[in-house]
Image 1 (tube, rainbow, N blue to C red):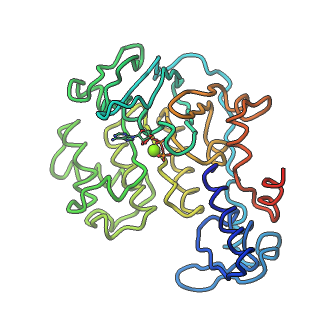
Image 2 (cartoon, rainbow, N blue to C red; image 1 turned 90 degrees about the horizontal axis):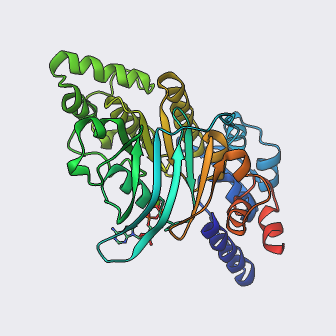
Amino acid sequence: MTTQIGVLQAIKHAIETTGTAALYITHDLAVVAQIADDIMVLRHGKTVEYGSARQIIEAPVETYTQALVNTNSLQKEQAADQSGAVLKIENISAKYSNGVTVLHDVSMHLPKGQTLAIVGESGSGKSTLARVVTGLLPPVQGSVTFDGQVLTPALKNRTKQDLRRLQLIYQMADTAMNPRQTVRQIIGRPLTFYEGLRGDAKTARVQELLDQIEMGKGFIDRYPAELSGGQKQRVAIARALAANPEVILCDEPTSALDPLVAEGILKLLMRLQKERELSYVFITHDIGIVRAIADSVAVMHKGKLVRFGPKSEVLSPPFDDYTNTLLKSVPEMRLGWLDETLGA
Ligand SMILES: Nc1ncnc2c1ncn2[C@@H]1O[C@H](COP(=O)(O)OP(=O)(O)OP(=O)(O)O)[C@@H](O)[C@H]1O
Ligand SMILES: [Mg+2]
């Protein structure tokens, strides 16, 4: 979000100073509201609505445009009791093979059945922390505790049971699935690995999982390339669920999706959380998503933990400087927001 403001400012400046005309293509309506004179809304290759930025943002006529303007309306009531922890991250420092330390003494915890959001700008170390927790990158210092037991640092030394309990959903569903495998094989693999399911029993369970992620019949023999972005992400969720996990780490699972599809995925994750008492670590750039899903929030900056606490505390004043900058950088769905922010 902080990077995005700089980019928007540069584009706006370029248009104004050179008198160049611009077409800005995006799925973020709050962003175009800041720089566009006119807005065209497209869907399925057709124009849904076309008008001045003011009309589209303030008085959209079509139902689809209205839905776009009103996304981010999800709000989660924060869990009252945040004591206890299914996952505890303590004093983690980590570095890659080039020797540069990218995490410095990071600690946070996640109570059972709740959602911990990790926010912070690009490069702040969010994905690296997810790698440490899943054992892909053993830390140089600190420990990860699951349900009271310290996890072995390296993935290859973890027990099958440890692997099962902790699943990861990647930011890019495209690269997280084998393009040569069908949905049946992708979701079936953990069923065989963890539960020894084969044949008809396996197929029945795959179909059951597809039903749970609200993908009907007819998807089971498709390849990833035959699915939309949102459908691929649903399959990734089903694959994580197939392991019957207790904690799911979600690394920006909706950032590549349009806002309505993203909202559908968030609703699905929230429903599954209630039904299965799942706990989530949810990595995101998007403060709107934090408001929608989180119980507690960790703010990271340059590999360090800046703030950690219940959502209501972290997202309300008094703020530290960095959290304040992050919050002020979230585009609001109204005209003139960017000018006010830059003027201030
Ligand atoms: N494989 C790697 N080898 C060396 N350095 C890496 C590697 N992967 C990431 N880094 C560095 O580690 C730091 C943290 O990266 P990380 O991917 O954890 O950030 P992030 O917070 O997830 O960012 P984003 O929001 O863009 O996904 C960055 O400075 C990055 O350049
Ligand atoms: Mg990342």
